Length: 194
Picture 1 (cartoon, rainbow, N blue to C red):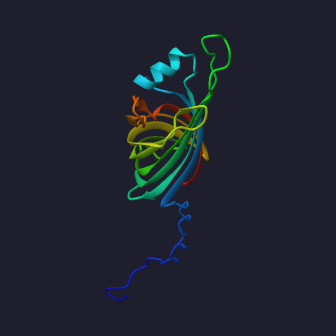
Picture 2 (cartoon, rainbow, N blue to C red):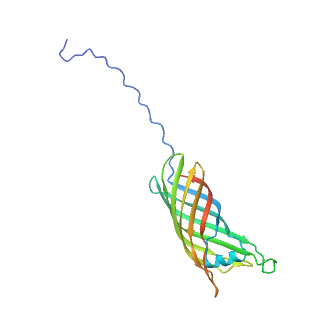
Picture 3 (cartoon, one colour):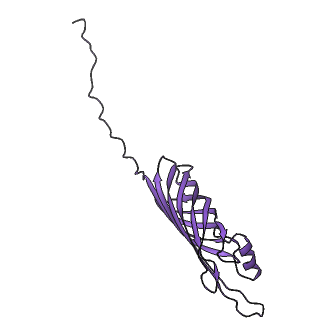
């Protein structure tokens, strides 16, 4: 026997197993929302309340963006709110109807706090608000800076969120008083992406 000979038996190597394909990871996200919220107090709103007008707004929104990391998304948002309320005049008859249509637009950022089946997130947003509060029809257009934040959760394609928008300005006209186009909101959300 030669000095380098061996009695070891060599077997064929084990077959290479391909790794399972990775789940698709979206680099973008989009959301549509609808909800309701109260109108915040202001000089103008306090006057409306004193005359019996209710303080509830209906909200509709859409936002979306790109994921710059696993947990940070940046993008844009647009929202609208609507309010219509009736009241009685001093004689018990109908007073002019209060109508308001508001629009919001600007940049937004979201921080997704985990990667589980239920995702918790916080968001911030800014931009501009435009509104038309008025009696007996829509009022003159007012504009105000808007900023706010929100916290919510998502399970699959649906979720819930609560937030607040500050959008305080002055109603146009000689008797214009301070008025906030924003306020607290509670939204039901539908998602695609992320």
